[in-house]
Image 1 (cartoon, one colour):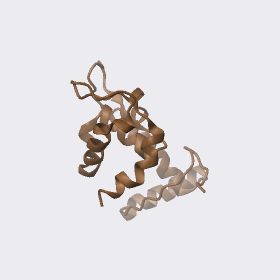
Image 2: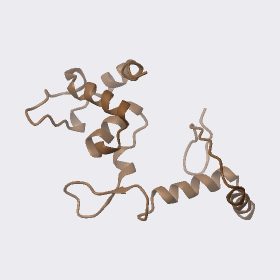
Image 3: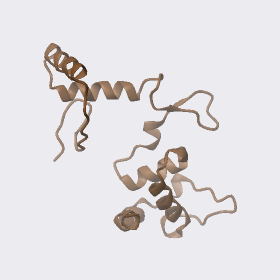
Length: 143
């Protein structure tokens, strides 16, 4: 069960080595704010990701200003996240994700409409239930 905390439930573990000075700074911030060190780190990461300087802002076609990418690509379901990323900002796909995306993009079972001559897909045409049902198999074929 995910741990409930500031910033939403925590259901993912990520280990990182910190320089001693930075770890001490995080510890002092936690004491100062009377909160767990994890909350300090999650808040700092959230602020960094959302920062217009070095954050997750990208230039997208048809947009005048850089766009905060996370809300455009996030979904609780890993399968739908991959499709959203592929449709929104495909250059960030890993090699394994690109291979899965090609299979998903070309498989009519996952889409309401056939792949047109422009070979573009639309998120609203996705059948997420079918994709989710096959997701483990699609990922497993990349191992």
